[in-house]
Length: 389
Image (tube, rainbow, N blue to C red):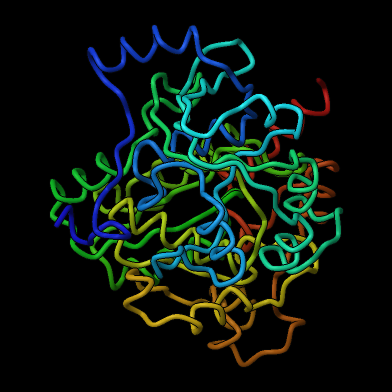
C-alpha cells in the first residue's frame, strides 16, 4: 500500500532512467532515429514516466487503444477512458521498424525519452472523435487536435531520459510519489482532489470547503499543460490560488500542486480520466462539478456525473463527490446550490466568462459574491497587462 490508496492497477509506474542507465541511454539516443514531439506529447511523457497515468507505461498498442475507445477499458479489463497515443505520418512510419528504439525529441532537438516501439497501426480518427468526444465537429478543441494528428499510431513502452524543459512552478511540480509522501507525513487518510483549469471563484471555494468537512486534506490540482487559447494563463491562475490559500484556507489542510497535463475537453470521459489520475497521486475522493472538462454545448450539464454509474465503485477505486451548480443567492445571503436554495434565479449571482471580461474591460470590480477581492485584483491586473502588450 502506497499512501492511503493503491495506485490504479496496484503499482505506481516509474519509467525514469537514472544514473549509469540514463547516461548509456543518452549516448545511445544520439544514433537512434528520432521523432519530434509536440508539447502535448511532452506532457504525456512526463506523466507516464512518473506514474500519473498508471498502469500505462507507454503509448497504447492497437488492442488497448481500440478497447479504450470502444469500452473505456484496457484490454485487461482495467478502466481507462482516454487513449494515450503517439502519432506520426505514413511517411515517418514507413521508416520505423517494430522492435527498435526511437528517440523522442523536443523542438530544441533535446532527447526527452526513448520509445521502445512494439506496434505501428492505423486508426479511425472519426470513430475516436465520436466515442471519446461525443462529436465529430472539428470546432471542438479536442477533436481539432485529433484530426491534426498523423495517420499512424506508435505503441510501446517509454523510458524518460530528460525531464521536459519546463521552468514554470518548480516548487509545485510534485509527482505522485511526492504527493503520497506528503499525505503520509501530514497524517491525511481521506484526501479530496479538485481539478481546475480556471481561477477559483466563490462557487469552487464552496465545493472545496464542503468536501473538506468530510476529508483530512484537500489537493488543489490545476492543469498547467496545453489549454484553449482563451483560457486564463496558468501563471495568472497560480497567483489566484496562492492568494486564496493565503487568505481563506486552513494552510495545514491544503496542498497546492500542478498537473502538467494537456486538457482534452472530453467532458464525461475526461472526468473519469481525471479521477483515475488523482487516485494515482494518492487521493481517495474527487470533486466532480457541473459540466466537468466540458466545452461549448457538447455535453449535458451533469453527464460527467452520470458516466460514473457505468462502472462499479471498485473499478474506479476513488470516490467521486458530485456537486450541483453552486452560486451566491442574495436572499439566502450565502453560497448555495440548486439542491439547497429555494429562491428564483432573480436572486442568484451568475457571471459568464463573457460578463467577467466585460467587467474587467470596463475596470469594474468583480462582485464579491462571485469572487474574492484578491482574485479580482489579480485578474484585473492581468487583463490590463494583456491589453497593453
